[in-house]
Structures are given as structure tokens and as C-alpha cells.
Length: 327
Image (tube, rainbow, N blue to C red; front, side, top):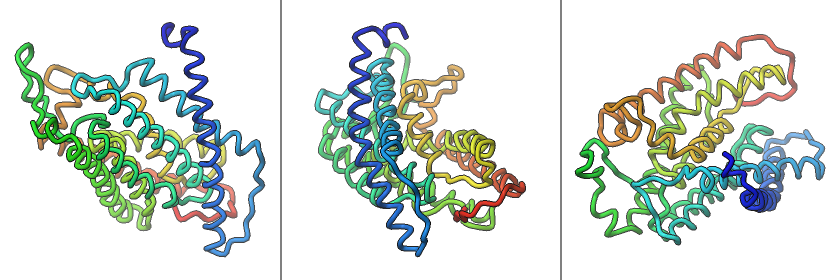
């Protein structure tokens, strides 16, 4: 910690915050435009008072995310793993993709919290840019498309990594990003259907599907599954805070997916290398079918429990609110 906040680090973090704040200004303006367009489309006459203070606060959110990313990646080495060691162009591409993701997540969160929608103006370009960046770079992944730590032998050999990943990096980048997008979108689509059965009404929108596709295209399928595992914890915690502050009995799920994605991005190395014992570790789960089944089942079960709890949570009487969100 002392090394991170050494005198030489403070200007670096300040620059990251400044860059993020500047990037957050158009994000906030686009979010405002999306909200106005949505209200016009549904015939709403509701207007909100906007000021430079609101713009500054929303832009500062992006600045804080950029500074936190800089501290996590370069201060604590959260993306330094022995399995993935990109060259300098690959590192630049990875950082560019992650900063793009943070900016787009800020825009999606701002819009979803204010209007309960995730606009395609953020998510769809993010998916396309994520796939193009991964393909062009060929070395921007957090973790390879496939790696099996169950075949590693201490002091003899490392994990199994398919040879074609090294010989065809650009094809690997394309496959890695597409798989991340497919796993993110596909898993949330399944959970969306499950939530409809549990709540007897739609609790997750199509925007959540495209949001997770965007996240997956930029961080990969392993990280996406960890995002889904952490999202219920973020949702429950934030839901209680919202309840205490606003007395509302509803929450949007998109912001908590975004929050979980940020947590995974900022703590990736710790999560990937987490080991409960010599026999159980997170990275070993991703190397075999039973491990993946356990992780997927745990994620779906935790989300199902959260949604069941949400149904009870929404049944608690609260003060009247003129806004009628879809959830």
C-alpha cells in the first residue's frame, strides 16, 4: 500500500482520473440523449432537471473507475498471471479494451438507474469493438480460451494450453471474444427465463442480455462466469441500500451486473488464483466439465435464490412512487 501511494504514484492516478473524467463527459451526454429518446418513444412527459453538477458527478464516476483500474493493474498487478504474458502491443490493446468497458458500463449504469433500460447505443458498439479489438490484437485476453490446470505437475510441467493458441493468435482472439459474448448472453438468457418462472413476470430485460454479451466480449468467458457468481451478492447488498435510502421495492439488475464486472476486473488475479485447498481452486474448475458444471449450477442457483428473495422483498409495502418501472 505504501508503495502504491508513493509520491510517484499520485500523479499517475491523477492523470488516470482526469482521462476518465474527460471520457465520462460524452458518456453522460449520450446517456441523457438515450433517456430523452426513450421517454419520447413511450410518450412520457416527465422531465428531469439537469445541471453541470450532475454532469460533473457522472463524469467523475468514470474518472474514479479509471483511477481504480490504474491502481489495481499497475499498483497491485491484478492482471499479472503466469499463464498470460502479452507483449507491449497486447498490453496496450488489453488496457484500451478494459477502459472502453469501464466507460460503457458507467453509461449503461447511469441510464438503467434513471430509466430502467440499457440502451443499445452503449452495449452493441461495445460488443463489436470488443470482438474487433481482440481479433486485431490476438493477445488482449485476461485468460486463454482454454487452459487446464488439472494436468499441471509441480516442478515438472505447467497447465495444458492448446498449441494452436500460440500459433494462431488472431483466430484465438476472435474465438475468445466470441465465446465470452456467447456465454454472457446465453447464460443471462437462461436466467431471464428462469426469473420469469420464479417471479411470474419478467425480471430481467433484453438489455441485460446484450450487457453481458458486451462484458463477455471484452473479458472472456471465465471472467463472465465469475461476474454472474458475484452479481447476486452485489444485487442483494445494493438492494438493501436502495431500500433504506429511497424506500423503493424494486431494483434494476443491470447495475449490479456492471458492479460485479468491475469487481472481477479489478481483482482478477486474486480470483483466478484463489485456492481453498490443494485439491480445490478456482482455476481448476475451469479446466474440466464437472468443475464447470459445478460453477454454472452454483451461479444459477444463487441467482434463483436472489430472485426468489426479490419476490418477497417487493411484497413489502412501501410509500407510493409515481414511477412504474418494469421490474
